[in-house]
Length: 282
Image (cartoon, rainbow, N blue to C red; front, top):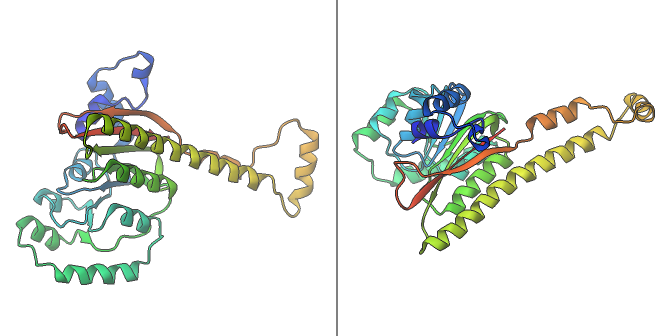
């Protein structure tokens, strides 16, 4: 799926301006921007196809493959870049943001694991032997994730919630690619279309909210000088028509995300009951 996206998704948005590019050129642009990213996250990862592709075809240095299930394809265990976090997506994002009590969580998960009959599947055993799975995640630096994939088998509102939490915790590193699979769990096409539109509105709203909040904090920080700087700040306000740009505002503007070229793409591998949303945080 990711390889197909690289051939059909225009990272620079030129298609929106009537400058259609060949699939080979689109793929080149995509790979230039999203290859060799330091950290990528795959939520709802089992059996590991997205994770394996990001490690092998896009040379991601670290792939965090999140799924509470134990099964991963045998090829996943051969990639040292991939680590399997056996937990739910929102739990993993909380731990990446440092918001969970890891010690309590690991005890709970280890106790639960002991009550489950050991799986003799060869792929699971290979994964355990390779040691590339964990029951507790770790905190990541802010603005460190270059690609987010969410392919959970759940209602599309839950997928939107995962994306909201990812953005709110400022885990993205701009530019950040996001790929969200919306599953059709609805009773009719009309209901799916309505819920899909609402989910897309949530996705747009969370980026606008973070953008506005970060800019507001930057302006408030810049408008409250202290110490010996207060006098020079006041003087400069009287002597210039425009307020000078201070480092805090520059840093805020740098980290405030904006969405680019959000598209719905029905991939060849999508079933009739799912669709894929692709976009970027810039």
